[in-house]
Image (tube, rainbow, N blue to C red; front, side):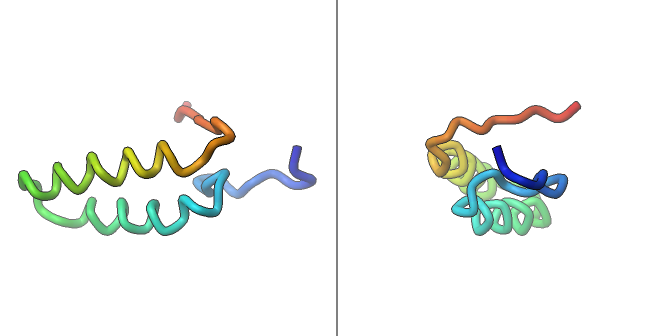
Length: 59
């Protein structure tokens, strides 16, 4: 267990930081088939990026 809690919204795995940034940028783009495909690919990479299984859900 970490000695101090993570800030809200921070990734449990540092490898996800660049993916989170890419997802945030994608959210600013208009909806399209290409955006949907990019979104799905980024989410798959995000899920695969942390072997620790540190999934969380929003309250």
